Length: 130
Image (cartoon, rainbow, N blue to C red; front, top):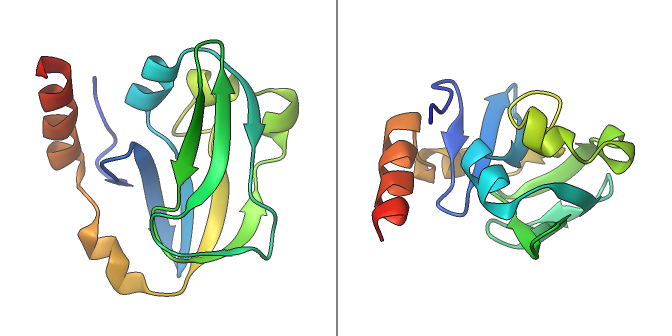
C-alpha cells in the first residue's frame, strides 16, 4: 500500500496536508480499508476549535463506529459536506474527494510531530505483523 509523500500522518491513521497555515485532513487508505464501507460521518462544524488528539469526528461503517482525532490544534474552517450524501468517498478516494475537514492551525510546530510517508508505512507494516 502506497502513501502519498506530500502528506503527513498520525499513528491513529489521519493524514494531513498543510498549505498556508491550513491543514486539510482525512482518513488514510489503510484506515478506510480496516474500518470497512463507510456509511455515515459526523464531521466538525466550522468555527469549532480542537486541541491535538481531541476527538473531532466520527466515522461509522458496516463494521464499527470509530472516533477520528484532531491531528493538529486549530479551528475548523471547512468540513466536506459532500460526504454526508456520499460517505463512500472516504473509501474510494481517501486522499482526494474523501477529505474530511480543514483546520486553521494554531500551532504549526505540531506538524513536526507527524509521521512522513515512510515512517507511516513502517508503522502500518508493524501493525499488520502484530
